View 1 (cartoon, rainbow, N blue to C red):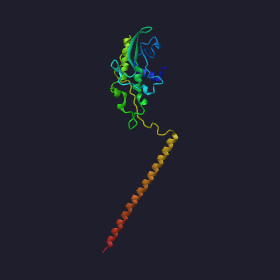
View 2: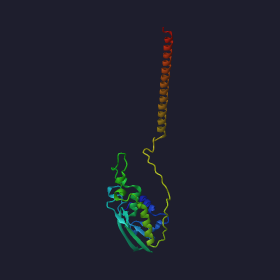
View 3: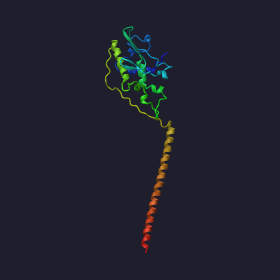
View 4: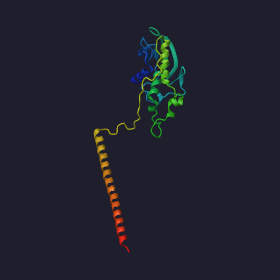
Length: 232
């Protein structure tokens, strides 16, 4: 049974850009496709429960290509078939699994033992770097390819505008929670306050010693000069 769930749905939603009717694209076996589906993407083994979180879910190099675009999973095969109401393309190139793998950096989960001295996944170990497409927006290219296939079946699909629609900021937080509970936070604040009070008291002691030393030196100088005045 295919492990098709919210993860696959998320990747498919990223490929179905604005203007693409989600109901026209089906991810599953061709015989299970609804009548309105114009493009059927046949799943690879990637989302199988016994494969998903194992080394078997890693793509093999060199990668195949589908219309000049690197393909991580599936076969670069497209079949034209007649659907119940109209023409249909059956695509055996698993763009959904390929997009999910790239969008989520899934290889960093599988290859947990590959880390640098700071515990980070090295860029030169990533699949995009090793396969030579690090600077290519491959998922965007998948989406453009899907729109092209829909047009080939007679669907009027507008071209996606070349603009940034959203910016999602990310933050690298090594310790998102300094204290697990409010009680722990209050204890830490009290401890810090005690440290600051102790530091303040120590500073006053040092200042008093310094002032006392300067006063004693001044008294000694005065006594010396007084004695000097009486010397024959």
